[in-house]
Image 1 (cartoon, rainbow, N blue to C red):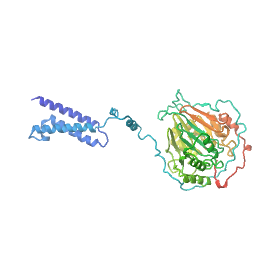
Image 2: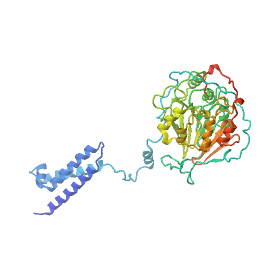
Image 3: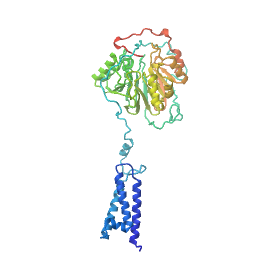
Image 4: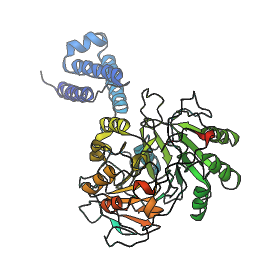
Length: 481
């Protein structure tokens, strides 16, 4: 006989069964899975007991129907309420309306900020020394005879570089490909100062917040004097990040003096970074002595590490994270700096073998708007496949006008000319400052001259004009150009 009570029991049983199915559908591989499964089983059991009297009697006993119904009701209510509490929200569910806004923002960005944890172990001494490379020291700097001549090519001085952007905001990369993965909303301007230090390297980056990155410090003969003078002229009283691309004396020649100066007369050195590959020279030993004397944090970096710079992504691309031997050039620290839609790549003295490794490992992400020519514009670097991957709009070559090594080499300038790369050479242009707001790019030079690589090729002095016998400091033998 159908009664109101039996209809109610059947209805409640169906609802409980539906709820059980819902609970099962929400189960994911998590710590709650087992509990959810148990609760779903209890719900099915309750549904069966409500629908089939015989099952209900078997579960809770035949002696007291009112007791059995009460126990069953409590069981169902507890299971339902508990299931509601432990069932996780779907990904599309809205968070609670009273959730704290700062907490939600922190949850969205958790794990994304770089706290320097990817850096290698801190060290204050070098493990092992290597034999010094054969090479000659550079000659005193000399001014180009015609570098002051103005050539109207529309590319020298402070003209804006074409970055290949296809929309008004520069929302595409240099080759026109859309960039969506990188954070492109930046404020202020990034300055990249290529300091004219003759046959050597030294580059200063200044972020919109005034944070500074100094990459290499020139030649050992200058002992950092030119670099320190330039930094002071720019109002720099602290070097937050001091990078040594490698241990040759035309790259770390001023490291000891820079550390001494800013630790003594300035606001100090934030941290120093190098590849950890040692060199047998007085210049390298002086660098390590200064690190130790002033208790500067020294980090060995490798591929995948990031320098902790606010508002600027700085990713190390070389040396390899795998065992890579003790060759200084092959392990030259190479860094890609990303600011908005703009990318700057510097590779120190990385040569063709290291460039090829970077192409194989990072070919799809090597593209850069501005590139500091590898190894002072030597033909040992800037090889074809690497340049295809980098595809820069601007290249800056740091070498002396009358380099005893013939830098920049004709083959490199010819290739740059064929690729239409806007080319700057410190030996001719003097200090070169590249400025970007994350989209538009401009370059300002100390001296005006054409930025057509073909014109720079013609400007190179002939072999007879170069000093044939460079001065060598035997205490610093192994200097490589």
